[in-house]
Image 1 (cartoon, one colour):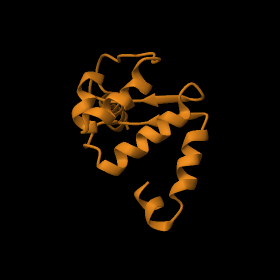
Image 2 (cartoon, rainbow, N blue to C red):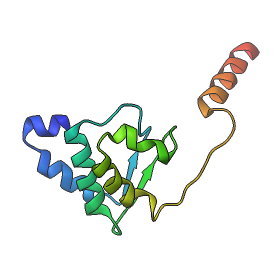
Image 3 (spheres, one colour):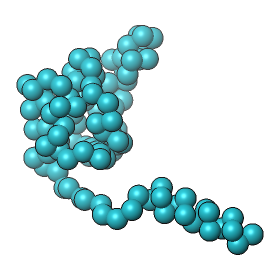
Image 4 (cartoon, rainbow, N blue to C red):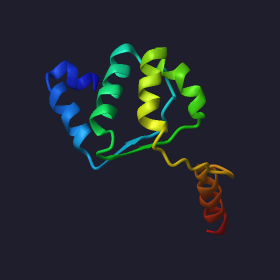
Length: 111
């Protein structure tokens, strides 16, 4: 989105995100959101609300997302659009990356 703001395609990018059938926000919360990012996220989620699916993956619990979003009012609005109609899945066990690394290591030992 920063690139889209810089090159003048920002409005078009927002429309594309709003119209996507499924939007995936992967690893949400790795870094705090900036002011522009918070507003853009709210705008995209507002446009998608009850229209399209949004998938969010995060290592953080939704209760901890307020701190990542950074502004209490915008955080409430963003979470209102994400959490209330959500289906939550909690994954348990080792990371798939760890399992994949172990499999790769085992294959190398067999050769």
